[in-house]
Length: 374
Image (cartoon, rainbow, N blue to C red; front, top):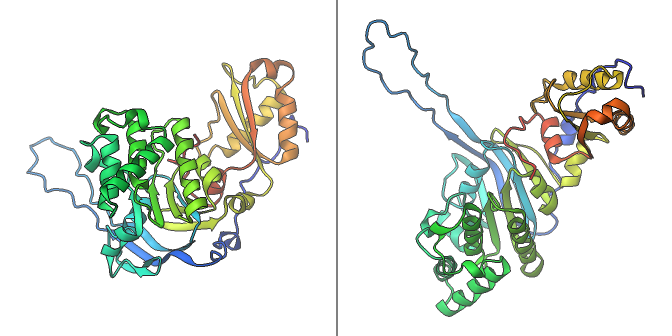
């Protein structure tokens, strides 16, 4: 392909309704069953304003409509599976987790954990699962060691057993040096890691972890991933992991449900989801100061970027960073064009990658805002 020749912008992949069909039911027993769950939050009414003074032309804030946080969600998680809920902020992940843990009652639908109906019997949920929420302020005044030990005691362990298990987990996560420090004196990432440690004490057959690695550095994040995978491998634990980190999802999960606006828009293995976008590759270009659009091949690439600039990802038509989704043949031609002559002199960096779950999300019609790659 000659990039100096004008061409129709590469169209985004089309995902057919058949491609959106969830993956087959888990092999073996089911740990989590969610069937047609609905949850709607009522809209907010604006407060009444006093009579405006003469000349005040400000407008009232309109009433907000109801929010359908769960709009008929159905999914199954097999025992011993690491299952993910992927989506941007506001997709309905945390609302679903609160319903799974018995903290929030759905308007309609059924939820079963290990055969127990937690809609009818929400108090059974704490006996079946360990939950790490986004906010764990109840532990703030405790030291790292005491927070983990106390959690174990509350889950039925004898004090000595809780102390022993908590110290083992602190060592596993690299927190031993911080054991005597209160959570309020830790950095954000360290505090989150200490909360993960507390969640892992007092072994439960089901772990529900809501953004467990938020704010962590890469070393701590890998320690959490290893600890989660170890519990699945050694104890058969089932894990439901909520994330908006596509790298985390691809590295750790057996299957993933993609959420958007309270709906499951796809459910499959990470590899199965990425297969939906075909054989496209993603080319990211970073120019030093500006793109040398006087070079015909670069001008042709700019036209491709301009054609894709209406995508939800917000690809810029101008600026230093360009993103293109191309066939393998087109990508090879593009790389050859920008790594020679004056184009190469103006190029600061480029990356070539196969599709990610973010690309899948965009192909399925998601907004992409709030997803991260780190």
